Length: 187
Image 1 (cartoon, rainbow, N blue to C red):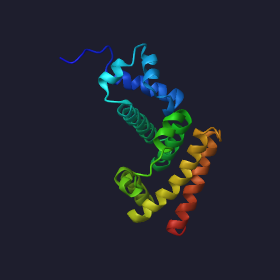
Image 2: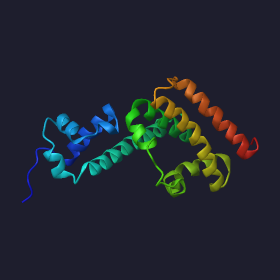
Image 3: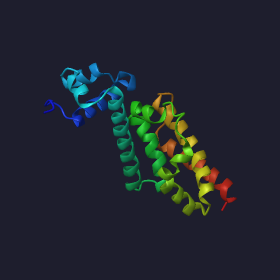
């Protein structure tokens, strides 16, 4: 019979996520998680093969939190859906700086943006519908817009910028309108 642990995997992941929010991914250590739980590291290694497995779970949890920002941003209808996704991305960077960094500011050399097209297909469909352009054009439009949004988010996550939401909204509209003009010829 496997040993009985005082904590569940979910409790350990939650503690690790909190630790990561406070100290970044470099602060995610077995000793740190154990201290958060008021325990030894034994339950961690009893429920996870290694720290890489726990780190992977933290990244998954951070991504689920990020996705909830996107869903809420679109659902509250304060902005058009495509703009809401960009505003939510920036809001996530502002409120969850360390989680933003592990999701979007890590080494991603093994990833291929083309392989992620399915994940952004709902956004591409919005662009295609709004601008009457092809999926390939919508993909390029989104990449250019995302570069702009990511730049703002990165500067906020690293505390280089501290723009208010109204200014951010205006800059996203300006960038969108400029790209729209280029892709549709001003229509």
